[in-house]
Amino acid sequence: MNTFVTTAIIGTGQQNQPDIRTGTAVDALTPTGEIERQLLLTAGALAAYRMAGSVPQPAESTTEPAAAEQLPTCSPEAARQIEQCLLNTSSDLLAQAYTLLQQARLRLPHSLLPLALDNARQHKVLRALLIPALGERGFWLSRHNPEWSWVAHFLTDQSEELPADAEEIWQEGTLGQRCEILRRLRAIDPARARDWLNTILKQEKAEARRDLLATFASGLSIDDEPLLEQLLTDRSESVRHQAITLLAQIPGSGLSQRMLERANALLRYEKKLAKKGQVKVSLPTTVPVEWQRDGISAQPGDNAIAQPQKEQYHNALLRQILDYIDPAHWEAHFSVTPDELVNAQKNGTYAEAILTAWSEAALLFNRHDWMAPLFDWWYAKESKHYYYSSADTKSLTLLKHMPQSEAETKVLQMLTNLSTNWSNQPIAALDALPRPWSAQFADATFKLCREFVQTTKDSDNRWYTWGHFLDLAGAATPTSSLETASTGWTVPERLGDQYKQNVTSLLETLQIRKTLLEEIQ
Image (cartoon, helix red, strand yellow):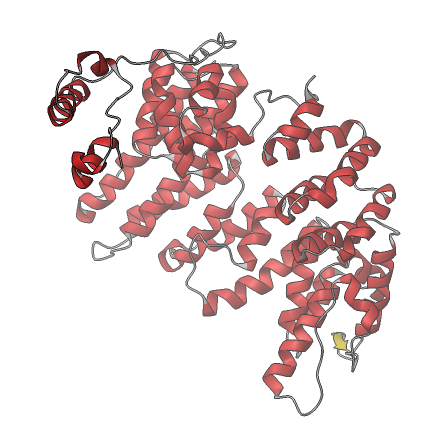
């Protein structure tokens, strides 16, 4: 409460001599005479003084300008095409455009940077691709808008070399930058990378420990075992799981040997007279305490537990061990092929748990010869019970990691009878294929697509699904097939405008890609 309000409430007669100084230039105008007159005139002058405003203070510092650009900008026509893709949120086309810019060592013009940064804020999959095309001005802009702070998780230098200020970034950078520095250092000097990580582990939060540890997935060796073993008792479950996953991939590690012992006791293979084998399961009645350190915590339970709950315990126990066993072990251990083992487990009590574990292990150890039979099993099962979409299912996850030629052969088999099979299953599988497609696959699928549109009846309302395929094909067609994919399209009049619009959209996409390819060199 200021002097004027206090004096007005108490009254001038109740105070000896109230202090009515304001600490401003108004004090020089204070009149003489009675205190009441001084108070009222000073208060009025102060009110007018405040209404007049104040002289702004000089800024303490100015913003540093962006550094000079190191890369030339792309052509105006390429920029125009990229702008249209940004406005239409064409993620597939943007990914290809950014890749072309990186290969050509070109950047976006300054006028497109806000739009591109906003777009990548919403589409995380584009962020790493956009970074090389931002240029110095893009990094500078990102520091002045909190919504673009994701840029700070990347290094400005996109090479694989260790920058001169690597240690400074390791100590003070963002988590994303530190992970990238550790990954690069590990490729150059694994021992030093281990020392760096070991030194800071105790002071980092769980998320940071997990993400930094994940950089060790490449180049694993037995030298990493001591560090990873100590993390089996980490206070964070996600860190312990990461350590188990890494240790399981190191041949000869203590954990991999312990898991193999347990796995061999769980499964056995019996050859039947009909030449079809069967995988049998022998579950332990209790889970030893020492297993818990290796992430095995499920308890099978006793006979008093309800059967569904008991099965859940058993399935969890199988997964916690079999997920970390290289599938190649079972081929050698049982002397049978992956196809035979998958078929042997088709109708078993624990079929889904075991095949789920084998699928996870095939992905973890990159066993391509297991992926095809596992894909067939999951696809047959899922197509009966799931409405396929772009969301991952077990079959689609396996398809994404299969050798491209093998994956394309699987999908082409789904598309061979378009009149009955033009549904969500093959569309979702098409979306899961690695891109770009091979020229042979693109040509074959476009041929089937043209045949479909010529033979389908006018009452057929599958134009939406068919159009979805064309959208995928427009982005996935290899550059060598862009010209052939653009020709030979005729839509019968009986099919109406929807089918024609689908073709028009495809041709526009292909033309954009051809223009980008010509302009970004």
